[in-house]
Length: 515
Image (tube, rainbow, N blue to C red; front, side, top):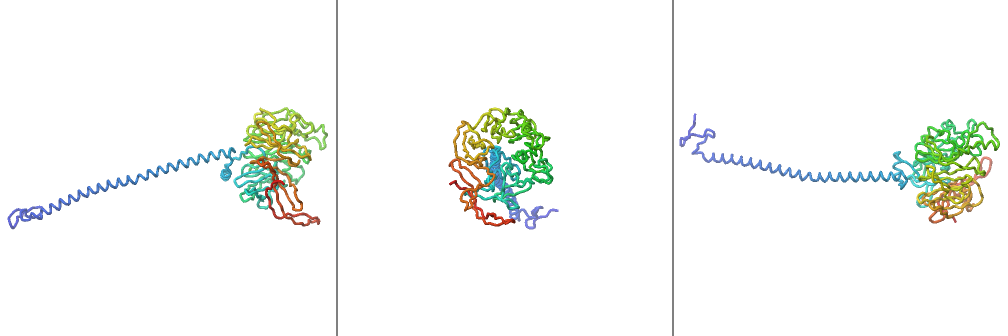
């Protein structure tokens, strides 16, 4: 039922309960409020839209740095890639000895990836392993400091001075595999450290040596197993060697005379390479280049055989320079026709065989060679003589294409002084450098110096000062000799027989120009 206004009788608004005539202001205010609410709502919606739009634009602005971040990542990736490429290139040129970078050798050695590829197969007088320079050709072995001082190397745990023989040690870029002084019962490996010490471990134990057949002597309990093992050379997983007889072993050990063998670097096995006989060899990149002197084993002949019987040991038709794979396969003759020089024994027609680049260098001690330095390519072609006169020793400077040699015939002792010559390999020009005494017959080139590979000490100078010279080198640029000297004090004590002996104390080794 409808309601009516008590003042004017007008029907009230059913929705609001107000009179349209009497209560018009409140209705208008209500409608205005409603309209305002609608307006506020629309304004809020517009504000929300503006806010959302501003937020989107703000996010867009914030995403721009992300583009910069991606760009930075790309730049970083490019730089890293460049570093990897450059590092790889440096490793390659270092491994192939184009440029030697000691720190790279150190890193590669630490992860077991080093490939030591010397420029020649000569036994090095000086090695650089990232820990410094070490002169191996002296006694004692010393570390060479930049200020000219020298520190004798002592090995742990014995704390004794390191003594190495040039022909009974091989360096593979990390370790030196060697006979240690006069210790013939085992073989060892040494690592030269940055502090001037060496770490020593057993490489081949006594049992492995004894069971290998490489034995110098037939008597029981004879531990001189390594007496004939010489000319150590490293390649790949093995150290290669020859069994070269001396006067002591020549008649008694004829079954292993001139046999070629190899030892695993882990020291677990020693094996002969087929029936190969050689008196000189060099190994490089999976190939062995060697001189077969034609020696035949005639074990049935008694000790003290006649000269005529001894001559039957040599098969001159077989004598020659060969090459074969390191496992003994693919053997082929490169150069034959060596004629015997009656002044040489045991058919020493070819000596000091060395590989450098694409060439095999050697001392041709045959009747026609007259102990001159010759070379042929590794395929057997292009035979030529490098030196004008006979040589008892030579060494190569491959960077400058030069050869240095000491005059005199190989293995012919002489009290006369010998001359040292420099030869340009390309044009064969020779320059006399200096003279040496006869016992300095083996030397090596290294970074502008000629180092002599000594087998003993030289007592020179004022004996009252106990001047001890352990090595020599020649500065090629300055044309002067230097001695490795050590002035040491000593005391005298007596052995069990009451005989006096000198005991040296203190050490002060250094290079000094010859006076």
